[in-house]
Image (tube, rainbow, N blue to C red; front, top):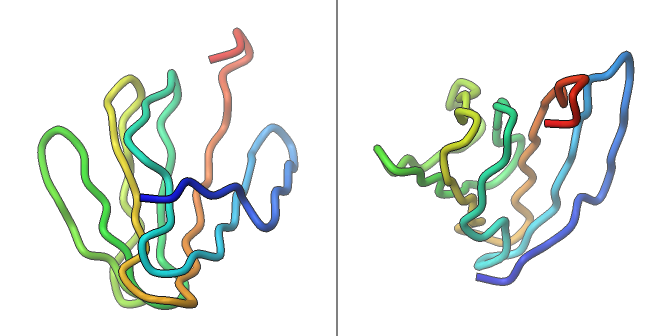
Length: 94
């Protein structure tokens, strides 16, 4: 998988919204962090995997919560996929 950076990154009142525009095979390789985040698919489709499950998301899939401290990855399954991560980093730096 080819790692990508957010196309748009917006911070408002300590909440970050990261918008990713991905082609097939691009995304966020396996990683973890000290905060949880919501992930949603706004266009196309993507595979979201963590230690307990694998899910194919599209625009009809409700946002999912990826737990703090647990590894996860997100990969676009088709060109022109847009997925969004929404999170708040704890005041201690998370």
